Image (tube, rainbow, N blue to C red; front, side, top):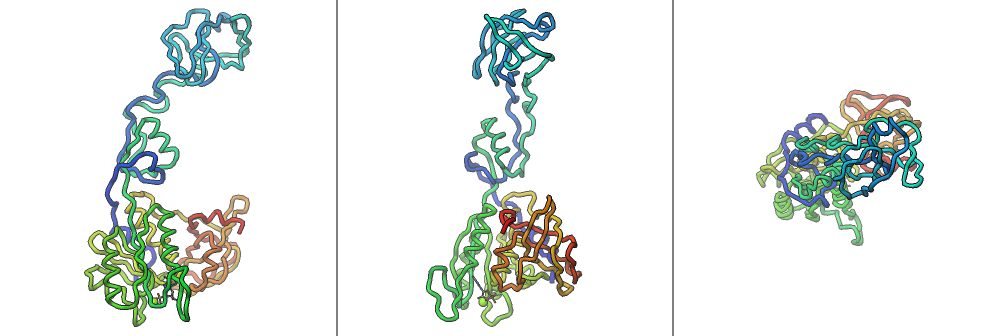
Length: 404
Ligand code: AMP
Ligand code: MG
């Protein structure tokens, strides 16, 4: 049985970025750009003023702090006329520096009277001038392929009029819940029936990373239903199933996937919760069979499926970095298997604290709701004391839970 790290790297080895599409910059936030982008021109394009004030010749000021005001260059204006000796040109922020000028004096540093200014204080050559290309030079690489497009990157691309850009495709991910006991949320539960919460929880987890959920509904515990729904799911970019992968009589996911020619990679992982997690592939389509227990479904998605889908959508950083947190109470576990401990996260003077969120039984959903993170308790360790440092994966939105 693979360890957690072995399972995760084996999954990551078998997935690759999906295709590329060109989209409008308007829709590109959160996507991964698929090509290097270089600057088609200098930025700024011309020397311009960083302040509202006066463009002057530095040597004039060295002679006298009093200059005659001649001319005005507003933002968006042009500057063809050379600054005459002994004069200052009124200039607005962003306006081009006129020929001859080599400093800008901010308006606050001047007193204006009868068509003249008196400059107070010191002036240095090149003061308050933004020089052409001081930010970006023509041909410079501004955004490398593989970059996540945040507002800063979108702004940079927009400033070079890159309004259509190539990005990696979002993954369309089929979600299939299995089990005779399941009904959909909103339906009235009869005796023994369980509401299918996993499909919607998985859909939310997919949305969180920018993937598109495709709902396949529920496959009942019979071969025909499994065959029909699973083959439908194999048409998506990836398929996630929940339940039906343990050794129970009616756990048909594995058998049916075999029949459909899906190639099994592993059927169990040495983790708790989430041991009966399977991974298989059908051509380029990865198939993740997650355990049915809602807590296990969410944790195995977070730890094993999420990195794979991020890679498929072109992300470079697919494994969440852990943060180190101080455990607030002792915890014990059996040796041999890595445990994911649901923890509340607190920040105390900048230090993360990990507070076990309560009953860690996989049947307890409430402690997942309370959790801001998952502490990774190493396989071989048994006892953890209050004050020990543990590695934590913060959950999406986990820091929103700080005061809860
Ligand atoms: P299984 O993996 O089929 O043994 O299911 C484990 C537990 O998870 C059982 O209590 C199921 O009723 C429950 N379960 C299975 N599928 C779902 C689902 N889609 N939504 C919520 N609970 C589920
Ligand atoms: Mg079942």
